[in-house]
Length: 166
Length: 140
Picture 1 (cartoon, one colour):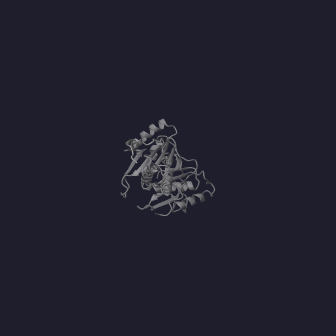
Picture 2 (cartoon, each protein chain N blue to C red):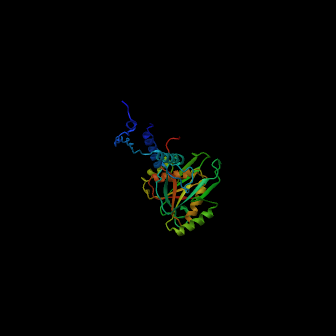
Picture 3 (cartoon, each protein chain N blue to C red):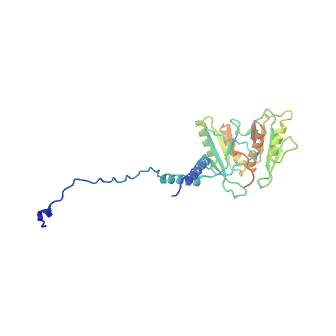
């Protein structure tokens, strides 16, 4: 059988068919927190605090009052005979000091003993926590000892403590 | 993957620790060795209307401790007369002025006494002495 050319060049029937496209799988979007900037800031804060922190003991205040319009306490004439504590520096060392309480024989040697001594004094007739305390320190006494003496009087619950001149 | 959660926990704890324990240095509170009395009765008071006078050793290595430096607030003053004049000015502006004396524990009483004398001469009654709070405990 002879085939004509028409037969061979016949266009193929057009089939209007689109194969169904597979939808591409949608990318799953997972919400994540970006921690990097936060970690940066936190580390900066940490470095700042480590670099600037200095550890030291807390400081406080021992309140006192000075006499109005005058110098120190010995320029006044207190109505009650005060307990006068003399402080002297006996050597160059930080513990070289001597305490003497006027009008008393058994005087303490340390500020702990002084606090106990002043407490005991209040039990004597004519003395109470209103009795004035005058601290008379020599000019060369270390400030630490003067404050220790003041602190001992406060520990013994005295209400009127002042500084005097030696 | 690197697990950052424990590290962040630790870092946050460290930050909270440092935030809580940090005390920012004040220009008025100069570094010095404050008095450390046994069983200190010093109270942690927040004073208003106060001026701080610092008395530091000029040379801590000097055994005589003869030279001291006075600071009125954050600024250094050269003489007691300057302290008196500044106190007079403050006392005029603030009627209930309180003076806080921060002196190094190693200075001599005579140097502090002169400041106290200047304070009293200005008619200022309220003077406060700064010391450490609580016991020092064993030497470290």
